[in-house]
Length: 323
Image 1 (cartoon, rainbow, N blue to C red):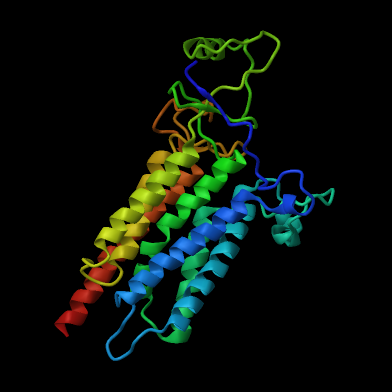
Image 2: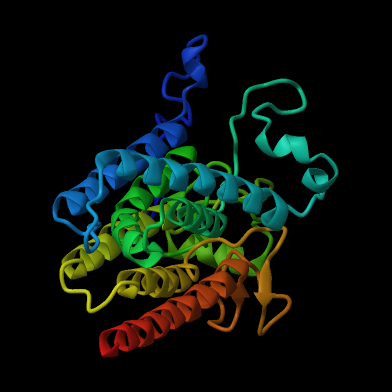
């Protein structure tokens, strides 16, 4: 068989079926790891003097309050953006208190399901700007350090998505394609479904819906958006030509990597493709590079923003040096 079944022993809960402890979820624990590793990387830069400014040193208290402010605003932005932009039901517009309500309509604990990366990035940026204004620190200098630290945190976030069995990719014939239990199923009466199953050695029954293997796109993102981007920025942290360079590199780098990986990731079913060469194209298949998702549009804006930050910061640094 040219596919892998999603491990049956993986559950969203850390202690499934155990009273009270069953409320603990891997996704939440991954956020703890993410913030913890980001703090370690930020503190390493602090010790290297990356946050020092002429005539003024930085303190550990400032470091702690800076990252704490960024985390709070990041979580707020991620949740609000997810519920208001990606949810098409409209329930959060009429009942905004549900945005931070961790129970479903039956009173069952669900946690805060649904966090948007792009919303988190916007929220985190606002938080850092507010903190820098209050403490009279250079936003570009401190955001460079933060942007170098945070990619490794996304590694854990995407692992959390994998453990939740969510944000899986489009169907694939690759031997590492994985069958996710909650993925959309297809009728075996459809010709392409029948041929697809035959190509990967999957037996199908005429009256049963077929669950086809998909890209484990969460793991792709964990590696490239997290580990690879982190290593690139970490290697550049002592070689940046001016403040703002690493911030721009992060925005453009993440945007470019995520834009490419979106071709493997499954778009939101209720949003589909924002731009489509074929309006009838299935979101489960990658039939054209011209089928663009919401995430890719936002990533394109990130790339442009990153370039603008690098160019603008470079011009500013050049003027200051000339003075």
